[in-house]
Structure formats: structure tokens, C-alpha cells
Amino acid sequence: MIDMSLTIRDATTADAEACAAIYRPYVLDTAITFETEPPSAAEMAGRITEAAATHAWLVAEDAGRVIGYAYARPFAARPAYRWSCEVSVYLELGRRRTGAGRALYRVLLPRLASRGYHVAVAKTALPNDASLGLHAALGFRSVGTHPRIGWKHDAWHDVAIMQLTLTADGGRPADPH
Figure 1 (cartoon, rainbow, N blue to C red):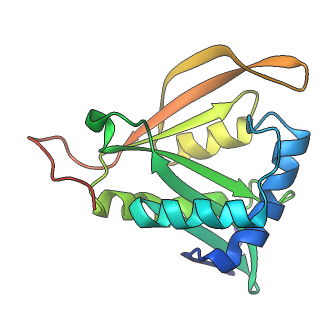
Figure 2: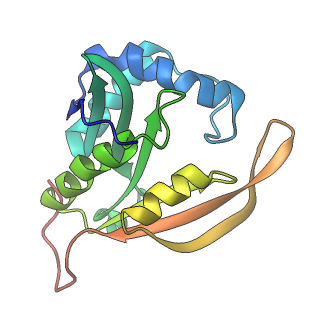
């Protein structure tokens, strides 16, 4: 079921509390993220500010209430990676497979391309069929798996890596902005 009442907009620090609340159960109860302590609203505000300055952080609202978010951040620190970014999406529990993740990415990915990013990378802790399906539906392709790379909840977890080309290849690109 696709929810057509969603509004996708740029996040502000005022959304930090809602984003932290959405993220908290993923941190505490799953291996979907490898963080082990949920970030505070203040820490989340810092993350929103940092991502928005160089990449993007978006929220999805339903009837004026934030129910999900997606963002991009640098893929890696080395200068040659500056045209690549890592993307993530988190939805309020019970909102998976509703179209909200797709709606967020349909705004996020073109924004990243317009800012000069060439490749988006998504890393998914396994098992997570919903995330793999979402990324595949948006054109991401599997480029590998890090086997048994993260330890959380008394078990090793694999991480699947998917990649999407955002802009056409050709010569040296301008620096992202």
C-alpha cells in the first residue's frame, strides 16, 4: 500500500526529537544499525545539520507528523571518494513497505545528483528483506557483502552493499556542492 498523503521536506533541527524516536527501537532492538546507544535529540540535531550542509537530510510527514527520514553522508574520508555518498532511510515501526521509503529516496537521490554526487551506496545489515527490496526497486545493484562484520545482540551479522550510479560517467566531475 502506497501512502499518497506523505509530505517530503528538508529536515531541520526541530525534527531531531522525532528522528531520534524513530531510530531508537532500531538501535535497541535490532541489528539493522550497528549503533548500540540511541543518540539523543541533541546529537541527532547535529547529524541533521552536518548532513544537510553537504548532502541532504529529508523527513516524511503524514498529517504533519514525522514518520520517517532519509539522509546521505560522505561514503569515506579520502578525497577521491568525495563524489560518493552513503544513504540511509528509517521509518517509524509499522511503516515499512508502505511507500514512505521510496518517497523519501525519490526526493533524496535526485537531490544528491544535482549536488554533484556520482554514486550512492547503501549498506544493509542482514537479514533485512525490506531494505534490500527497496534499494533494488530503486535501481541499486548488489556489489558485495561484508560477511560477519558486525557483532550485535550476541551474534555476527553480514552487511550487504548496494550501489546506484547517480550521474553519467565522463571526465573529471566538478566538486560536489
